[in-house]
Image (cartoon, rainbow, N blue to C red; front, side, top):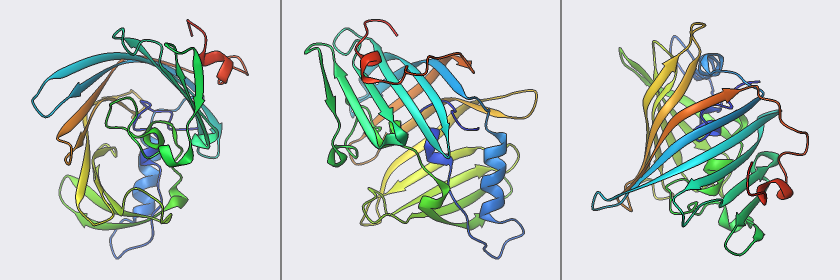
Length: 254
């Protein structure tokens, strides 16, 4: 089971390819990306999240994240803010690959279910939507084509099969040597570039697998960005069977 990666990029890189007229196919590229992604059944991570507004002002948040690979590209996720005080213990729970999402607001001591219509909205002022944080992205959800090859990268175009997707297409640049996604461009329904995700720092393990440690997601329309820096990752940790639950996210400590 792969890809409980550095949690936020998670599902965005597990997509499908069709055969173009190149020496290597999009399918083969994506298979290699999957093979190079560090594996784990469960994961716990501490991360720093830096929000940068249009004037360059920064807000630093600390988050703790848990994930479990449920199989068949389905991941359960908990994301909790640890600081600053105004968002402390606000917690997102994603079940069944994002089919069910819940948000715990400690100020009100209430859990609210996230409606389907809200999942394309930004999560707590970040540049990630609820779907991007907690959803599962299957390769079968996209039609993918290899459109360019240079000395350093493969460029893939991915078209969502779901007409209700927030994006008309994604352009992804894959590092030819290490097979990880360097950059992902997200285009809106009118075909305009909307967001750019860049992988700023990776860690290569002895077995050749890759862990993403730092990413930058920029919203070009809002002139706002979110930088995520992974500070600590534990893999294959024991978690109770009922850990990913509404009851769990209401606890003062996870």
